[in-house]
Image (cartoon, rainbow, N blue to C red; front, side, top):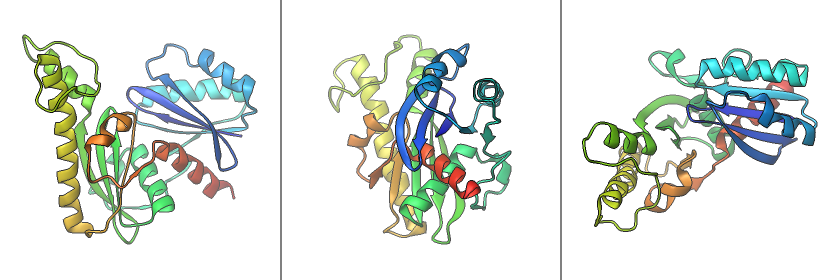
Length: 246
Protein backbone atom coordinates (compact mmCIF):
# COMPACT_ATOMS: atom_id res chain seq x y z
CA UNK A 1 0.00 0.00 0.00
CA UNK A 2 1.01 3.59 -0.65
CA UNK A 3 0.75 6.44 1.84
CA UNK A 4 0.48 9.83 0.14
CA UNK A 5 1.11 13.01 2.14
CA UNK A 6 0.37 16.59 1.15
CA UNK A 7 2.05 18.96 3.62
CA UNK A 8 0.29 22.31 3.71
CA UNK A 9 0.82 25.33 5.90
CA UNK A 10 -2.06 24.39 8.21
CA UNK A 11 -2.56 20.63 7.87
CA UNK A 12 -0.94 17.53 6.43
CA UNK A 13 -3.48 15.58 4.37
CA UNK A 14 -2.80 11.86 4.12
CA UNK A 15 -4.30 9.19 1.90
CA UNK A 16 -3.81 5.41 2.06
CA UNK A 17 -4.00 3.80 -1.39
CA UNK A 18 -4.42 0.14 -2.25
CA UNK A 19 -3.75 0.24 -5.96
CA UNK A 20 -5.90 3.05 -7.36
CA UNK A 21 -8.40 2.88 -4.51
CA UNK A 22 -8.18 5.52 -1.82
CA UNK A 23 -8.96 3.55 1.34
CA UNK A 24 -8.59 6.20 4.02
CA UNK A 25 -8.08 9.93 4.39
CA UNK A 26 -6.86 11.61 7.56
CA UNK A 27 -5.35 14.88 8.70
CA UNK A 28 -2.58 15.85 11.12
CA UNK A 29 -1.91 19.53 11.96
CA UNK A 30 1.35 20.62 10.37
CA UNK A 31 2.52 22.10 13.67
CA UNK A 32 1.91 18.83 15.54
CA UNK A 33 5.02 18.39 17.76
CA UNK A 34 5.50 14.69 16.97
CA UNK A 35 4.14 13.00 13.83
CA UNK A 36 5.04 9.46 14.88
CA UNK A 37 2.26 9.03 17.44
CA UNK A 38 -0.77 9.81 15.20
CA UNK A 39 0.82 7.87 12.32
CA UNK A 40 1.45 4.79 14.48
CA UNK A 41 -2.24 3.84 14.32
CA UNK A 42 -2.13 3.91 10.52
CA UNK A 43 1.01 1.79 10.37
CA UNK A 44 -0.69 -0.79 12.61
CA UNK A 45 -3.89 -0.82 10.57
CA UNK A 46 -2.37 -0.89 7.08
CA UNK A 47 0.71 -2.52 5.55
CA UNK A 48 2.36 0.61 4.14
CA UNK A 49 5.13 -0.27 1.68
CA UNK A 50 6.00 3.16 0.31
CA UNK A 51 5.29 6.84 0.97
CA UNK A 52 5.21 9.86 -1.35
CA UNK A 53 5.24 13.45 -0.13
CA UNK A 54 4.68 16.87 -1.61
CA UNK A 55 5.17 19.88 0.59
CA UNK A 56 5.19 23.66 0.89
CA UNK A 57 6.76 23.56 4.38
CA UNK A 58 10.43 22.48 4.10
CA UNK A 59 11.05 21.92 7.82
CA UNK A 60 7.98 19.70 8.07
CA UNK A 61 9.17 17.72 5.04
CA UNK A 62 12.37 16.83 6.88
CA UNK A 63 10.45 15.96 10.03
CA UNK A 64 7.92 13.73 8.23
CA UNK A 65 10.60 12.04 6.13
CA UNK A 66 12.53 11.09 9.27
CA UNK A 67 9.33 9.65 10.76
CA UNK A 68 8.68 7.59 7.64
CA UNK A 69 12.28 6.35 7.48
CA UNK A 70 12.12 5.12 11.08
CA UNK A 71 8.66 3.59 10.84
CA UNK A 72 8.65 2.17 7.32
CA UNK A 73 12.33 1.24 6.99
CA UNK A 74 12.28 2.76 3.51
CA UNK A 75 12.97 6.20 2.12
CA UNK A 76 9.94 8.30 1.32
CA UNK A 77 9.72 9.76 -2.18
CA UNK A 78 9.75 13.58 -2.16
CA UNK A 79 8.11 15.35 -5.11
CA UNK A 80 10.44 17.93 -6.61
CA UNK A 81 13.51 16.08 -5.38
CA UNK A 82 13.01 12.41 -6.26
CA UNK A 83 10.08 12.70 -8.67
CA UNK A 84 9.62 15.62 -11.05
CA UNK A 85 6.04 16.39 -12.04
CA UNK A 86 5.93 15.65 -15.81
CA UNK A 87 4.31 18.84 -17.01
CA UNK A 88 5.79 21.67 -19.07
CA UNK A 89 6.14 24.61 -16.72
CA UNK A 90 5.81 28.02 -18.39
CA UNK A 91 6.23 30.03 -15.17
CA UNK A 92 8.76 32.85 -15.60
CA UNK A 93 10.77 31.30 -12.77
CA UNK A 94 9.72 27.62 -12.79
CA UNK A 95 11.28 26.81 -9.41
CA UNK A 96 8.88 29.24 -7.72
CA UNK A 97 5.81 27.10 -8.37
CA UNK A 98 4.76 25.07 -5.33
CA UNK A 99 4.93 21.33 -5.84
CA UNK A 100 1.33 20.98 -4.68
CA UNK A 101 0.21 23.28 -7.50
CA UNK A 102 2.09 21.20 -10.07
CA UNK A 103 0.67 17.98 -8.62
CA UNK A 104 -2.84 19.46 -8.82
CA UNK A 105 -2.23 20.48 -12.42
CA UNK A 106 -0.96 17.02 -13.32
CA UNK A 107 -3.88 15.31 -11.58
CA UNK A 108 -6.29 17.67 -13.30
CA UNK A 109 -4.87 16.86 -16.73
CA UNK A 110 -4.92 13.13 -16.11
CA UNK A 111 -8.44 13.08 -14.67
CA UNK A 112 -10.23 15.93 -16.46
CA UNK A 113 -8.19 16.81 -19.54
CA UNK A 114 -6.97 20.17 -20.80
CA UNK A 115 -7.37 23.12 -20.93
CA UNK A 116 -8.30 23.35 -17.28
CA UNK A 117 -8.51 25.69 -14.31
CA UNK A 118 -7.73 24.24 -10.86
CA UNK A 119 -8.68 26.24 -7.75
CA UNK A 120 -7.37 25.18 -4.36
CA UNK A 121 -9.12 26.70 -1.34
CA UNK A 122 -6.49 26.03 1.30
CA UNK A 123 -4.52 28.24 3.69
CA UNK A 124 -3.94 30.29 0.56
CA UNK A 125 -6.30 30.25 -2.41
CA UNK A 126 -4.52 29.36 -5.63
CA UNK A 127 -5.72 29.43 -9.22
CA UNK A 128 -3.72 27.27 -11.65
CA UNK A 129 -4.24 27.45 -15.39
CA UNK A 130 -3.38 24.63 -17.80
CA UNK A 131 -3.36 25.19 -21.57
CA UNK A 132 -4.95 22.95 -24.17
CA UNK A 133 -1.40 21.71 -24.86
CA UNK A 134 -1.23 20.50 -21.23
CA UNK A 135 1.23 23.22 -20.24
CA UNK A 136 1.26 24.85 -16.82
CA UNK A 137 0.71 28.52 -17.72
CA UNK A 138 0.59 30.13 -14.27
CA UNK A 139 -2.12 31.50 -12.03
CA UNK A 140 -2.98 33.56 -8.98
CA UNK A 141 -2.26 33.36 -5.24
CA UNK A 142 -4.55 34.98 -2.69
CA UNK A 143 -4.79 34.92 1.11
CA UNK A 144 -7.18 32.17 2.18
CA UNK A 145 -10.53 32.66 3.87
CA UNK A 146 -9.26 31.98 7.40
CA UNK A 147 -6.19 34.18 6.92
CA UNK A 148 -8.46 37.00 5.76
CA UNK A 149 -10.68 36.67 8.83
CA UNK A 150 -7.62 36.64 11.09
CA UNK A 151 -6.27 39.76 9.40
CA UNK A 152 -9.51 41.63 10.10
CA UNK A 153 -9.13 40.81 13.79
CA UNK A 154 -5.41 41.53 14.07
CA UNK A 155 -5.36 44.74 12.02
CA UNK A 156 -8.45 46.42 13.49
CA UNK A 157 -9.32 47.62 16.99
CA UNK A 158 -12.88 46.35 17.32
CA UNK A 159 -13.43 43.40 14.98
CA UNK A 160 -13.44 40.11 16.91
CA UNK A 161 -11.64 36.86 16.21
CA UNK A 162 -14.25 34.48 14.82
CA UNK A 163 -14.38 30.99 13.38
CA UNK A 164 -14.86 30.56 9.64
CA UNK A 165 -18.34 29.21 8.94
CA UNK A 166 -21.39 29.76 6.75
CA UNK A 167 -22.87 33.25 7.13
CA UNK A 168 -26.48 33.46 8.33
CA UNK A 169 -27.44 36.02 5.70
CA UNK A 170 -26.08 37.90 2.70
CA UNK A 171 -26.49 41.32 4.31
CA UNK A 172 -25.03 40.81 7.76
CA UNK A 173 -27.07 42.09 10.70
CA UNK A 174 -24.32 41.80 13.30
CA UNK A 175 -20.54 42.14 13.24
CA UNK A 176 -19.83 38.41 13.13
CA UNK A 177 -22.16 37.73 10.22
CA UNK A 178 -21.10 40.88 8.40
CA UNK A 179 -17.52 39.58 8.53
CA UNK A 180 -18.55 36.08 7.44
CA UNK A 181 -20.71 37.40 4.62
CA UNK A 182 -17.93 39.65 3.39
CA UNK A 183 -15.39 36.84 3.38
CA UNK A 184 -17.53 33.99 2.01
CA UNK A 185 -19.60 35.92 -0.54
CA UNK A 186 -16.63 38.11 -1.35
CA UNK A 187 -14.39 35.15 -2.18
CA UNK A 188 -17.21 33.50 -4.13
CA UNK A 189 -17.68 36.61 -6.29
CA UNK A 190 -13.92 36.96 -6.67
CA UNK A 191 -13.68 33.32 -7.76
CA UNK A 192 -16.45 33.60 -10.33
CA UNK A 193 -15.04 36.82 -11.79
CA UNK A 194 -11.48 35.49 -12.04
CA UNK A 195 -12.78 32.33 -13.73
CA UNK A 196 -14.59 34.44 -16.32
CA UNK A 197 -11.43 36.43 -17.01
CA UNK A 198 -9.32 33.26 -17.28
CA UNK A 199 -11.81 31.68 -19.66
CA UNK A 200 -11.55 34.75 -21.89
CA UNK A 201 -7.98 33.60 -22.52
CA UNK A 202 -8.32 29.79 -22.41
CA UNK A 203 -11.75 29.34 -23.98
CA UNK A 204 -15.33 29.57 -22.74
CA UNK A 205 -15.64 25.79 -22.34
CA UNK A 206 -12.58 25.39 -20.09
CA UNK A 207 -13.61 23.20 -17.11
CA UNK A 208 -13.02 24.44 -13.58
CA UNK A 209 -12.08 21.95 -10.84
CA UNK A 210 -11.91 22.98 -7.19
CA UNK A 211 -10.27 21.34 -4.19
CA UNK A 212 -8.86 22.24 -0.76
CA UNK A 213 -9.91 22.27 2.86
CA UNK A 214 -12.41 25.13 2.53
CA UNK A 215 -14.16 23.89 -0.59
CA UNK A 216 -17.02 22.24 1.39
CA UNK A 217 -17.91 25.69 2.76
CA UNK A 218 -17.56 27.90 -0.30
CA UNK A 219 -18.75 25.52 -3.03
CA UNK A 220 -22.41 26.49 -2.56
CA UNK A 221 -21.63 30.17 -3.10
CA UNK A 222 -19.61 29.83 -6.35
CA UNK A 223 -21.39 29.58 -9.69
CA UNK A 224 -18.43 28.94 -11.98
CA UNK A 225 -17.04 25.70 -10.49
CA UNK A 226 -17.80 22.64 -12.60
CA UNK A 227 -16.31 19.86 -10.48
CA UNK A 228 -15.40 19.37 -6.82
CA UNK A 229 -12.55 16.96 -6.11
CA UNK A 230 -11.41 17.28 -2.52
CA UNK A 231 -8.85 14.50 -2.98
CA UNK A 232 -7.26 15.97 -6.12
CA UNK A 233 -3.77 16.41 -4.63
CA UNK A 234 -3.73 12.93 -3.07
CA UNK A 235 -4.90 11.42 -6.35
CA UNK A 236 -2.17 13.35 -8.14
CA UNK A 237 0.45 11.91 -5.80
CA UNK A 238 -0.80 8.41 -6.51
CA UNK A 239 -0.79 9.02 -10.28
CA UNK A 240 2.74 10.41 -10.07
CA UNK A 241 3.94 7.39 -8.08
CA UNK A 242 2.25 5.06 -10.56
CA UNK A 243 3.93 6.80 -13.49
CA UNK A 244 7.40 6.43 -12.01
CA UNK A 245 7.01 2.85 -10.83
CA UNK A 246 5.17 1.17 -13.72
